[in-house]
Length: 157
Image (cartoon, rainbow, N blue to C red; front, side, top):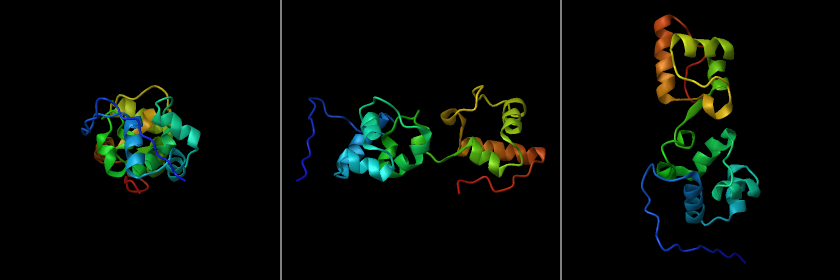
């Protein structure tokens, strides 16, 4: 037997694009699909406890889950706050980007900081080093202008 329970708040949520937390949108998507937390967690590929923590805003998912979460959210990703780009847009991690370029991480970091004068954090750490379409387009044009040739096309494949 499957029971679903939803707490009705006095003030309904107005769903506006770009205004909601990941927890709100995860819950909305899960309930629209008629899933339990454990079923949503299985689709995403995490354990139920982690999913529960994300939905209750006790913790945030690590970057490795962002692509699966984006796929799970589908069209509902539009409701996410604009600061949560990794759940709304496709990206390349620094490892993926460096693999496609003719340079290692240190050379790439130096190129991005010194040559392109892009503002990046001092340490290479997961979420901080994601490159979205806009940044990749800029890097691609600057590399071409400076005569660098990537090993592979800078795409999201």
